Length: 140
Length: 319
Image 1 (cartoon, chains in turn brown, red):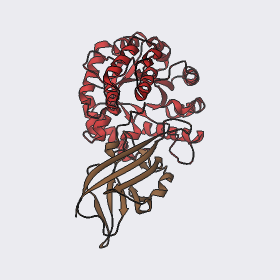
Image 2 (image 1 turned 90 degrees about the vertical axis):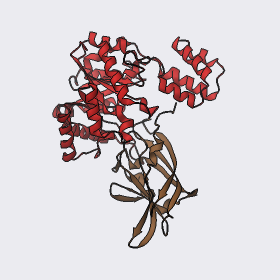
Image 3 (image 1 turned 45 degrees about the vertical axis):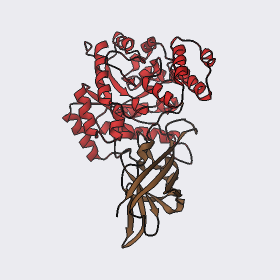
Image 4 (image 1 turned 30 degrees about the vertical axis):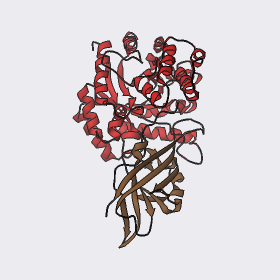
């Protein structure tokens, strides 16, 4: 009876999308995410991270995951068993896009497939598939 | 509350929904708990310790100041056995031992005398923890959760260590969920929302309550989802006898007073506090019972402060 873990709505907090700049070059934008659970986790428990913006799937190589003052490629996440994601901390998914995102409202959907490290022991872990979709504002 | 050997504490985990939605900060959780009439606290380290798993001296100092400010006793530091944090393999025995030692060290630094761990620790590791318990003067207790009971082979082994070479340091934290008779209101609501037709669900609950066998419930006209849920109800709400506490209490340093929803402060319809609490007093239990509200797994919108106040009233009535 998989009814537990009603936390998916936490995945996308009501925070604006922020454009990312290097000098005066807009190279992408950042979406805030939180870990959808009652407790924190280790980043290595993230098995998949997928993002759609305005209905368009973002390529894995065009994303960075920023947490604890560090930035990681999606392909590195599985290795991060020493990186704790505190349940109240906001991580950023930085999406590489020339000129950033236009000002205004955008539909963002995030899918986080994550392993619960203390459940289903001995190799068979509970893996949750959390999805959250929201319309968020990108401010200038 | 006439019994002065049993005291009430609260697991901060009870306030999960308030904490996660940032309605209450850690300090506000502590203040609330003290205001409602609890005297001690349990912290789930992986939930409310921002620098988990190794909090700084600065954070630990602030935490200890809060304990003094709100006159709360740090009773239990709750740890997980996170076998699955690596993507390439499970943690091995030595790693689990060292992670558990670390939790015990940080528990000690934060002023706790007890670490609550999980049954998946294995008897081999649990036995090897005894010297660390002695060195740190730290109790290490395993929570007994549904569907476990004292006669599960692994628990027979744990109880043997608790009663012999680990006596005084190893122990059990019975979770009152092992005595749960029937699904709580919030689960029933979730089942309906998930598509369990109301008339069928009522019938199933009636049969389950009257102890009719599962086979009989399965004869109802249930669809696939309803049949699956019915199986779960029968599997999950299959309580052990309260008399089993007699074997546990001598090695029980702490108790999880699990509850999901209280309609009032008189009675829990699902977990028979009216029979459990007098039993604890009769068996001479001395220590804390921690309110462990878990309704937030089923409904994040419940007024948890009210639930905790009802819990205090309920315990005061039967202790």
